[in-house]
Image (tube, rainbow, N blue to C red; front, top):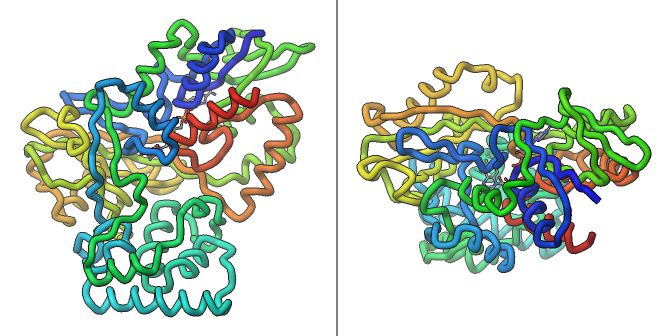
Length: 433
Ligand SMILES: Cc1cc2nc3c(=O)[nH]c(=O)nc-3n(C[C@H](O)[C@H](O)[C@H](O)COP(=O)(O)OP(=O)(O)OC[C@H]3O[C@@H](n4cnc5c(N)ncnc54)[C@H](O)[C@@H]3O)c2cc1C
């Protein structure tokens, strides 16, 4: 029984590692020159940047967290989150509902008042249950927090109207306790999203060091530069081709984006249409090195204001001092877009210049301190749960289940899966199989 694992990102490599432990025979087929997918890190001029987007390690799932930390061994640092939202020129503590006292008094009052009024109306059954992200923001937080931060930020990152986004993603966000909102408004410290309050990061090598550690354990099973282009079944065997050579397997587990798999399998039109209708967005990472030992003490900064390109700016040299030269610091600005749109087709140089100018306007950097600027684009970054998501995914899942190709991982399952969720998916898959 020989198994093909399509894709050498975190999910593919975790599956491979677990299979090896279970004595199974398999290959990992990866199209890139190296493995890692979204978790690749660029090393340049003594800087290290996670160019698939800023990554940190955290999880509610203790077993999975142990698994990730075990992969890093001694190569890890624990940090306490120090994250802010740039709101009308001020730094507001993250999450926004825990930082109300940082707002101008009038706006703080509006947020608190709307939250409480909304809560009372909800208790009386006067507020209808939400059907989309926009309604959920109002339903959960009231008008103030929804309109000032949640809706603008979400629409900026998703590049999609909030009334057309479903509730898949928000299900895991707990309702904020009213006590916390009152405390936050009065300036008494509270923390939200607490399972991420402390996070880990590799001391050396950026987030790709997690990948490298997995790779070392299964090296002889990885075939890179093998882009899966065609898949067909002959008798009970799967034939996988990259356009130049063919490989034969008894079973396929796919971790590559469902869009890529569909191209290779050529399913009925109904399935192809459902895949075409799935929504996702892409990311442009602008990586900046600065000729300053420390620019601030922030972990990362959310930027809801649309006049700035990036929705988030992170500060990797505050995660680990070893990702920048000793006398320098670094930041990474993330911009979401869609392949082929105006942002995606803008020249690299123009995006870098505009980002540097934004960062200067935000008073985060001085342009004269920039000693390195680079950019990378990633097509598959975020799954968008539009309102047709469940219908489309049912058609797709039913089809692949029927033909016998298993889907595991962020863009294969087409779900908002973080690293810990991907590992959990791989563990569950092996456990069930
Ligand atoms: C901006 C951003 C920030 C994130 N931050 C965090 C964070 O802080 N913490 C966290 O836990 N998670 C974070 N994540 C999520 C995390 O990156 C993913 O959960 C994880 O990397 C997904 O791994 P994967 O293997 O499922 O998919 P991928 O990483 O997408 O891997 C898929 C692999 O398939 C390969 N492939 C594609 N097509 C083919 C083909 N035709 N043939 C062969 N190979 C192919 C690709 O090259 C790639 O290597 C973040 C994600 C993004 C986008």
